[in-house]
Image 1 (cartoon, rainbow, N blue to C red):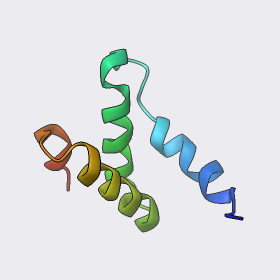
Image 2: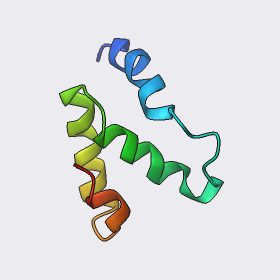
Image 3: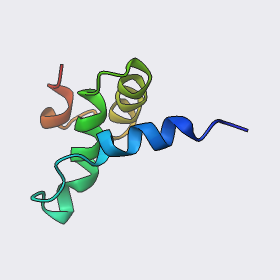
Length: 64
């Protein structure tokens, strides 16, 4: 079974700054937060999710 410590550590990073985001854009902002993360594993997970789900969304793919 995977360790849940990653999720506990990553959740505040993924959820940061969502207060003013419209409900229709929350999922996209979470992916952007993942891509901007200092943790390479989280950024990699965000890149994989962005590739699979947001490949044509410039707001997501222009992160870096």
